Length: 628
Image (cartoon, rainbow, N blue to C red; front, side, top):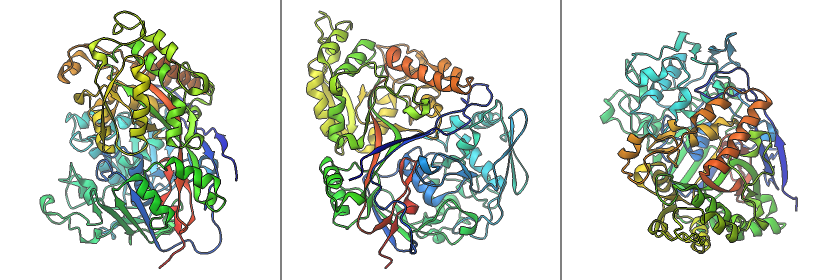
């Protein structure tokens, strides 16, 4: 058996915080822990053809709407299969260039003005849409159309429009103060020019995210094919990638939006069927091999059952599950199965998150006590042991900080098993421990509303946490929810969930800001994203959400903005200092695992690749042996 190896690659990513000025900066890439990579890199023979059969536990979050989707699973469908961008990724691990950007619809890297405020992209010719627009070539105006939709607050709910606020006039357009985004122009059909308000050296990474993928024109409709579909364009998505939803040719955009019928290839909560896009020309796309002819995905079911179906070859792959611990043991110890397990660092963190607006987690001593008590290794064992990742002592993955905090853990305990005595010493300092005996005894410490994922191992992890925390006086009313619903409850501070036991977070692109900005900046305080704690919330916001005990929460916006002004090694140090500040002076999370992606594949899979961008398998590179 090959042992799991840790590979570290530092990639130059000129990153800068959206709200701050600065020059060139170097950010980190990603760490790629790889084990036996099974069918990875299979060579020889024709890999194309056949049907890839996948199972998926949870539905996509926003029904494939590119301006809304902020979910790694959907991002992989978009990168691999459905959508192309100006720049994109190859769908490979870090060691093979998986965090590097390459021209996609752009013909080359952009040209950038001396003041770094004007970026110009030249488009390839011959890039066409899928059905029913296969005769329509992608033009520069189509990207402007997408970014106008991303600025539209009716269309971007749940998305990440904050990444594009650096474009001149973007926020004014979104607020209805301007008729156009003044920083976007198309001098001709093959030229897109973008003017920025501040130097933003990672702009191409932001434009590689699905929200910036082109939308085809449709007569004189301002938003083209997306016109009239503020809430559901994903159901009418027109592809640019090698695949499209089955039945896309039946969509009729000549009808009024209310009379249009979506492609039948995606049935929410039930199934996804992707077929080859007749408008895609492989000659214009050297990033996607697109091996399967057809991809069929069943949605729903039981985690264990899905993996049993992979083992029995009734399914080829599970998209979003957690390989059961006993299955990991089987595949890592059985010589006949070892070539069917794939392990890669996913550039993601698993953690428990606190709501600072809900007692008793408004008290930092309670949050610190939880960190001291948490059995991190027990949490990892319930996921499958060391194969599933490294114990986390802080928040940002190490590669985004150039490994400056690789050995840092302010709540380190023997064997990462927790330390109740240290937890009690911390709890004794809390206002909710009225007699300072180390046990939380105020009424707020009982029946605390906690939400978690209903799929294993999350209920088991909740069951592990409960008796541990009872020793320091914390008891929980745990609600097990479907994954999408869980994230909705955690994200929306209106829900008043006090603690979230099941979240995880992965980078959006290889830069520290993609952890700091979305998770901790006050700009992320809205119902579908991602500042669970309430950091930076104003008194009016807190009142609007219905909280009465807590009236203010500290902001860390200035520290995030300060890192945007740093350059070179100072930028890594800035993010490391911010991470340390969070862990010691804010304590928003109890982090426990730097996550590995662990996949098993059926005997039918003859090629596997890991997409470091999405932190998932590259679906278009899962080649199948059965071509029938």
